[in-house]
Amino acid sequence: MPIYEYYCSTCEKRFEELVFEKKPTVVHCPECGTNEVNRLISLFATTSSSANSFAEMSGESSGHACGCGHCTCGHG
Image 1 (cartoon, rainbow, N blue to C red):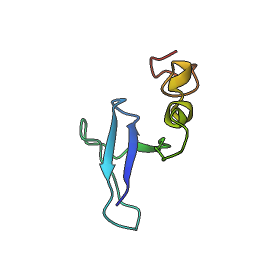
Image 2: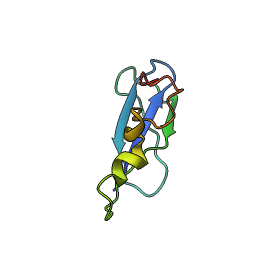
Image 3: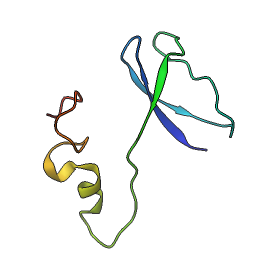
Image 4: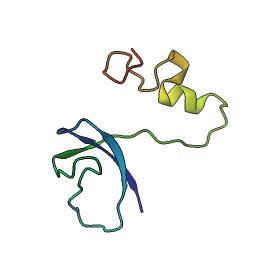
């Protein structure tokens, strides 16, 4: 069962939702209740022989958890 990350365009809240079904389901924002939400592309961790692989993949090595440094996440 995957956990998806969503962004509510109405109240601008980010949240996660555990999806139990294989079919697309209607997701509602837990803050305002609207279904005007967008599924985000999330990072995931993998195992590797390199100790810094997660930091490099997530952008933490550059000081920006989002990896871009130019978005509105507050890291840039």
